[in-house]
Image: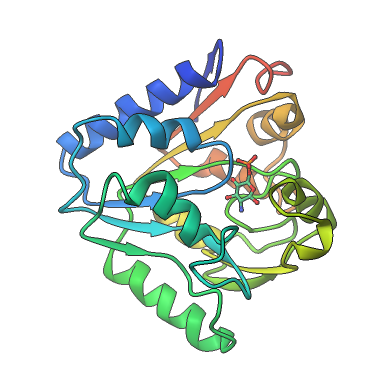
Length: 233
Ligand code: GLP
């Protein structure tokens, strides 16, 4: 795991952009994408660039259960607004949050992942160390599942909703096993509230209590943090 600390989010996002550009030039075709505030600047850089993803495939990490793709807080909507409108991919996959048949939805998503092995996965990290929506306790080899969100995650994400009551309590998430299958991973984290999770991910034991700690066992992970998120390192 290579850890690089930058002065701010803009500089770290520029580094992420450069790595993506390089992997695209080297033939990467399948990109695992994340949502949240963390990759916003990266997606702006990509949107304003001349990179061409029209022959590439994107597969997102997760989607809120119960939200349709046209709901403003759905991750489908986020991706559309923040990236896909400016940079269309050949195919873009996210879980269907409106599918109430979890067995069917998760099996379909796993099939998509099997058909399209991820070349480069973008990750953020939750304050509790979650990746995607794989909360503490999730098995390291798990595949796509319907996850119960922890109160910490609901609280952290309520800033995007009118009230905490409106935050979905469940989400479909790509599993940690699938994330670990990605050939290359870039994890970004910004702000002081991520500092402990980043420290534990880099220096702590590999434990399901801190899902991101499993990344210590992946052979191609680059961690990009700003000074605040890296302050305990
Ligand atoms: C969210 C998402 C994650 C994201 C993380 C951090 O709940 N499921 O994919 O990386 O939590 O979010 P943010 O980037 O807004 O801090």
